[in-house]
Length: 600
Picture 1 (spheres, rainbow, N blue to C red):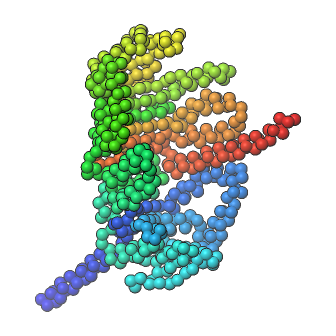
Picture 2 (picture 1 turned 90 degrees about the vertical axis):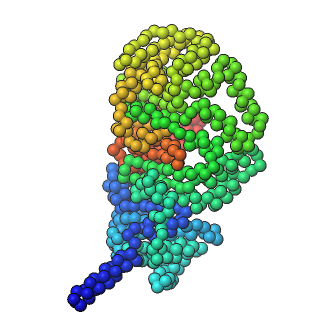
């Protein structure tokens, strides 16, 4: 019996020691070391994988083969080679051991110096990471640019590195390298020693984690609520002035800052998505926030995605009639000059008198606030290389779709008829087509007063709660087909909830332009330059940007709809800039030589 009791007590003691060791032991993640009151936190993950992707990419090989680039990169390459030789590690190895996860905390400012901390996760290869850091610091000291001193804080040995006016403290722990400036080091070391509340417990950080991927390759969290006093002071200084415009800008900036709680940005370099979110909490509603965060419905324009060879821009402004009232209310809130307010009201009254309609009741109230424009470059465009003018006219030929959200079809029809009477424009119906139960109208509008001898010939229809119009009935039918077959579940959540959207098929548009031969017609541009640029732009694919409003904030997503990662896109963009720079320099050289030719 005594044996069993002793065994039971021993088990409890051992379990307790194990649990206490686990609780007080090494933190599992960098976030556990970041103070909860940090003004900003930057997280960088898997730099080694990004470096490998860059180094092995065809873009990097092409970059290094550009004429003159090897010479420009000679000095940096020598420095990297020397560092690799001294460390006995390749640049890829350094990136892998130091770049698994890096966290940067901006805690504040003291004596005009940043109070900041840096934490590096060394669990990929602790010994190599410590060796690399020590060697790099040793190189800095041997050059005479830094001084080194051993210190101790809370029984933890650390080193102080003095470089001119900057003092950096750093220490090696079991799983992390901790560094900091201006008190940032000690603050993070206290977190390491004591544990407790960290940035993971900050409400703003938790909220932002639900909106953007804070575990992506690059993520930024800004605690705007904590930084508000400093931001308000900076805004007041930059927007100070006695004139009315400066005062209005300052008031709007102060309103936005006081209601902003947090900001988050996420970039997946190996993915196809960039996320942005601003968390806003309006305690005292006002005309500015009322207008920005008014309830919006989803836009129908998203149902046209993906659009081949197209550019799509769509916006949902909210209730248009309410926005007209909101504009006047906002001016009063911002204490605008009463004469300016009266002038706007006078202009609105004159417009209503001239058109014989109540602008809000008879027209704006009939709209939902959605406006979508879609430009399509058709694949069957015919180009005539012998006739430049004809080719340009073909490229400018209007192939577009306009979609307007309709709340009241009868009101809109009456308003359009009234406006047609005022412009003295007679429409001539030439065709009515029944397409899948929807009547597509095509009419001729002679432009007698504006452009004699010319006319517009649009096709349009009403489908559900939208008005669809184009100068080509084929595109009206295309929109009807796409909207009928579109399923809400097929759209990414970011786009389904969008209030504003822009979709650009950069590659498709570039391919159309390239095949047209238009650029080759410009004799001053070398053919090899055209080929290099157009190939890169065509490979860029397409990009969709959504912008959403909600009672709790503003979100933006930049989605790549091609297979290329953002690493490849960024490198392609860099190559385009290099080519453009090389072409510009060549043009400058040619222009300097021309005066001598002209003299001859």
